[in-house]
Length: 261
View 1 (tube, one colour):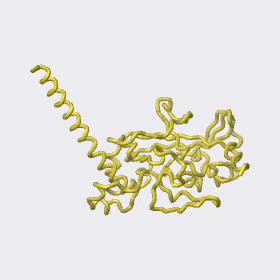
View 2 (cartoon, one colour; view 1 turned 90 degrees about the vertical axis):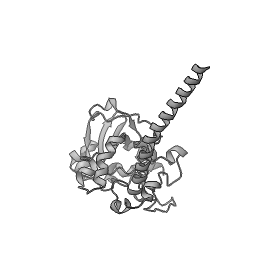
View 3 (cartoon, helix red, strand yellow; view 1 turned 180 degrees about the horizontal axis):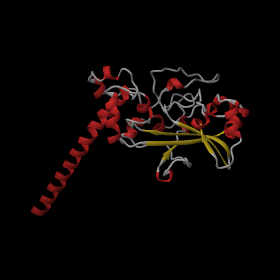
View 4 (cartoon, helix red, strand yellow; view 1 turned 120 degrees about the vertical axis):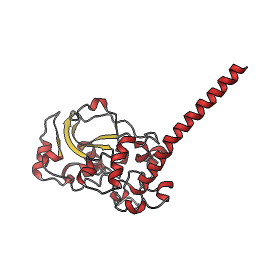
């Protein structure tokens, strides 16, 4: 009986220690998520917001989506509110995808509901060792990444159209930026890699991005931000897990859909 009692006490003690340790990890991650949801990682008023207790104790709106990039077509009625960061403004997604918080996924507070991408960027080193996720459910305007709507020069378009099968080229190597590059999705990609290629299915545009907060990369590399956001960029890589996005938009698919409208 004494042995059983001791074992029960040991099991209870171990459980309490485990819960205590889990709680010690969960609480600061939860607070971090609250701060990220209020400030984003490019919020110009972050310094001011960090002075308020509610920034740490409550959940803000930012979840990695910026719906001010979504503009409705003529047959859609949607009020675009720059202050609304709802991942699913058109109410077309299931509950898990409609309620996804990329900040929470990055901090491992929420499981990733995004589907795995069935393709990988062949040009990326060690891509076979990385799990890529698709944001196709959040690509509101794929036509913005296809053909003449890219806004590229005729020379660049001809270069893309004349690619051989298996060839890829980035917009950077073309020497042009897509002027409408922020309007095809409400996922807050900011600095992402737009490339073009041709495979057995035809010409495609590819979107690659890593949801992370590297202090010397992406946004933090191009914008010298003063603390505390800069400090956040140094801390977040130590506690979060980067999310890799990759999708291909085939030109023939988009053109076929446009023709059928």
